[in-house]
Image (tube, rainbow, N blue to C red; front, side):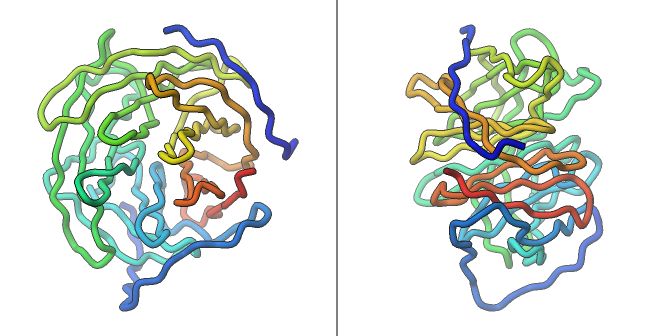
Length: 277
């Protein structure tokens, strides 16, 4: 694979069982900038959402059919805590995002998976980012419908309290937007993007870095970094390196934005970190 980043401009139109190891002292995980490397291995069965949280820990969750639980995982793959999300169902959790809320940070769980395209609404849960030793955390809920009927999606990112969803469609993705408010709402379709590599690419995850104003978008075989414009649209993009994975569905920036992380579904899969150059 070509490890050099390439810039391009795109046209736009418009739980599994785990062993818990609790720690007493808080520890910051901030690896030095260097080459791509394996930091550890995934302790979950079907990791489909991941985001970097306080102190550099990795918040993860399992795919559809699992309990409504978030796992705090060290980059080395050690489970530091498991937090039950009270008030949340877990029909098909597909992504996890993080954004500012009040004086702290919130996590957003995207219950948006719909392979059969039959759901009349999807759900986003918002919760104050917990401590790894918290056993439970209460969530707020927002149910949303699509403007043109059901569609499958696996990617969510958040800019302040604005939700951004990217659909999972062959060779393309529809960019939807909504302001988070507990209750009900409707996605606004603001943009359609053709994916660069092939007509069969599928978007499986995303993450946003507020200082950089950049969005990581991953497919099963590629990672792209887009500029999030001030009008909320995705603009110029470049391709970034990604390792081959069995079923890669997660992508996340480090806090400083100098690295990004990705993992595949499957217990024991490598936890990869890459320098962002």
